[in-house]
Length: 400
Ligand SMILES: Cc1ncc(COP(=O)(O)O)c(C=O)c1O
Ligand SMILES: Nc1ccccc1C(=O)C[C@H](N)C(=O)O
Image (cartoon, rainbow, N blue to C red; front, side):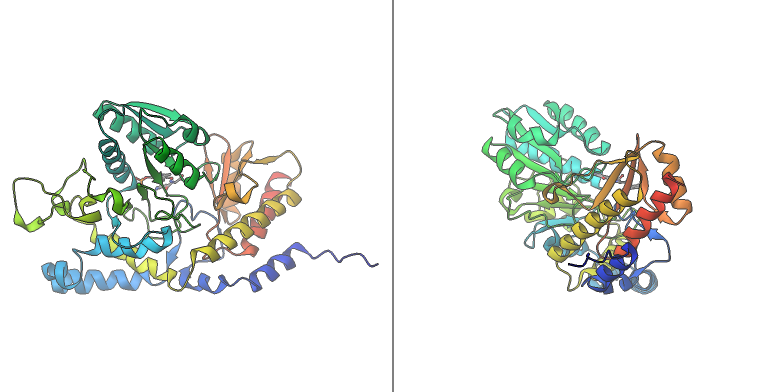
């Protein structure tokens, strides 16, 4: 029997790219020769955005002016764009509004969840490994509402939720390690305890299926500037499950969330449905840039995105193992597909300096304290050749 012929890794990468059904989508983005693995911080620019934004400024702002609130659909943009995001996170229409930052939406969602849970539930759980803003806001929400905050590792939340628990705020994918938390299981356990589930989807939306409706998530928030490519500071979104919309009592009841915003009434009366999650005047330029950015999803299914994401991170992990001498890096990202988001986090000595050197050589990832190299894989535009080049460059930096 003849030995199997070992395929050169660069050839393997090229073959994987040639067989990739999503490969043509890269042309929908503005990219250069750099290997861009930072879409989990700031997604690349979709090619349709600059012209659309110029049109919004020149025609809608410059010429139509105030008429654009109605004639150009500005006023209804938060719910219209929410409905555009909905299929990507497994939500039926009418449950998502776009606006404000993720931080502000975390506050709205968590306080509303505490209010929905009722007075007798006096503790709030929060993912102890969370991106800091969620932890800060959860502490303030708990303090304001007179509840006790209990930070827990996400894998402990299901078992610890009990009759005192009002709600838990959990990240779907951990920003540092790339671990994918068990959204269906944790949500079901919270519900069994009579508590509400609030999920932060920043690092999962646009990278993998979320299934908000299917799993009965109560409330969720996420940013749009990572895997949804909405641009720097693009508005975040708030999902309010239809089942809890009637009881959603916003801690930020601004006039945009009023049943009759132009009624100019002294008393607040919430709008029907997810609209009550709106606060003030939407940030139209960012919002319409996001709307144009979402066109890259036309005809793209999130299942195909997930399949490519896993193939990319598998291939990258394999190439890192081959290119980097043993012991120099340690993957913090779970090997099991069921526990992996769309990034690879490698612990490494002098990670800050190593990332600076990678960037100098055209491989853009990021460094997170204290010792983590983070590589984000955006299936819409990252190629297997990018993954190959990144691993090879890392090998060259660490073992010159
Ligand atoms: C999990 C998570 N939540 C929240 C944020 C940020 O919130 P904001 O969009 O308000 O800056 C980030 C990243 O910036 C994040 O990774
Ligand atoms: N919004 C930003 C603005 C500037 C620099 C980074 C960010 C990030 O989004 C960081 C990201 N949330 C992270 O997971 O580290």
